[in-house]
Image 1 (cartoon, rainbow, N blue to C red):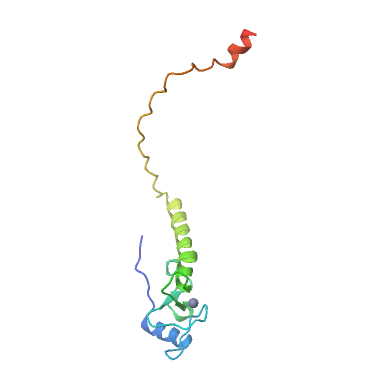
Image 2: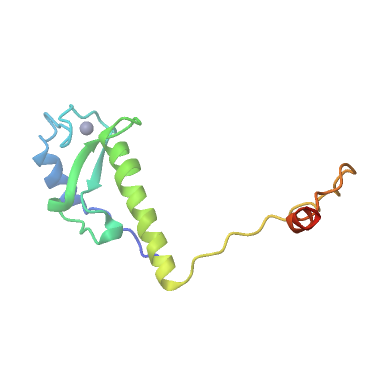
Length: 128
Ligand SMILES: [Zn+2]
């Protein structure tokens, strides 16, 4: 069920990079922070997995490289949960959801001898 991921072609990356300020003053298109070499990502606005095309209109240059960066936040808080939900819905629809394996439990130890269990309520009422 997997297809190859559609990465942005180089021409799209070049055009998008120019849009975000070019090599002289590149800035994150989300927060506006200056971008450092190797610390940015070309992000699909509409995720590839949802049919987002690899075109410049669907591409955003985001800062990356830390957990608080725009790319990490978008990926972890938006894209991944959305993809997990879609995967679960698809699996449920197709009936391919795997049942959770039952973990074998050790046999229960017999109850320690103690008080005898109370007789059922009817016996109390009959004894009145
Ligand atoms: Zn940013």
